[in-house]
Length: 416
Image (cartoon, rainbow, N blue to C red; front, side, top):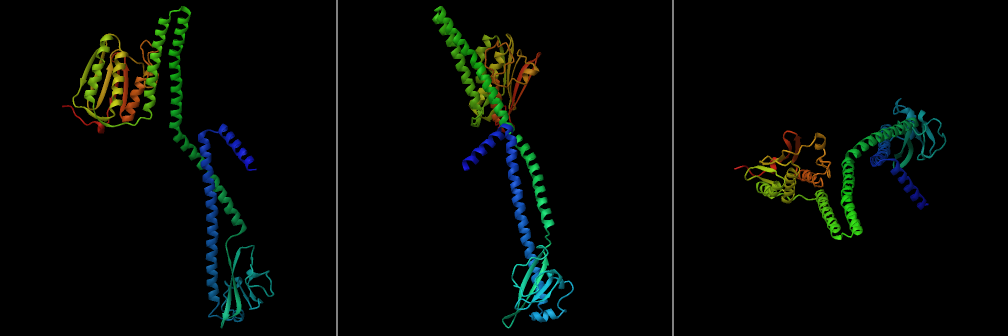
């Protein structure tokens, strides 16, 4: 039986998973918990309320009996005397002799037995709407009678049904509110996860597409070499594509590692770093007939990760040189507020500018320039890891400019 129940539960879970989204399933589980909590709390509070009310009624009834038992009077005397029973008390009192004979019974006890009765036997009056308290009357250590007092509990069957209906309605309303809140909260909470999943899927698709090209070229080069017998040429071509694929894999690993890297902050001399990277690209500028102009303030020190910042500066300057027209200019400016890298011949359209920081995106769709489209994606990740800001602008007249704005609290140095 338990195995059948387990299979049924798994089948139900599978159907729910297929029919509802993750957010909806989480909202339903949250709603279920809230409804159970409301129902259990309602039952517990109702039971506590009934018990407390019964306790209060019992206390009041005992107080009424104390008033009736004037100085321990005999039960027969109490029954015979009307002075101790006021008009308001008389309908709710019953007096019994020691043997259980009814000496007096108020209207509330109408319909009960008139002969000898057991004083402490359970007694239900008015369909349970009255609580009966029995007190033994003693004189000289012996029981001389019993006094019973009935008090209305205020709890009718209709009232109990109404309270049950009220609890169910409250549970329904709370369930609806819980579902709406849970759905909204789960969507808000899971949005970054969905976005991350979409980015991962897109990244995987782009990586597969980029790797497919060199692999196809390697296969083609080897096929040609086998057919023509020109092995050296085919192997060299394949080797070039293997090198390209290896570089691509390295860049992919760089991007992937940035998602889980721990930033090791420390004082970084940005002046020395930018000067070093600019010097390293001097030869590339000559090859492409590009002029580099630098304006670098001295003693600019920031709190950052040296390895990551080297990647950032290198990618910005290399891109500015690579995607520039012959005879163009690359400008590198460093202040205590920002690092600015621009070129004069790399116009990017407004539509392309929105996507330049996405992995594998290249504004030059002709792929006339070599590259993987990962450099600016790395720049954006490094800037985000440091809590800085990255802005990009481009125009046909001026060119393209990238500005990395430092957080003021991260800047330690000032220009001399």
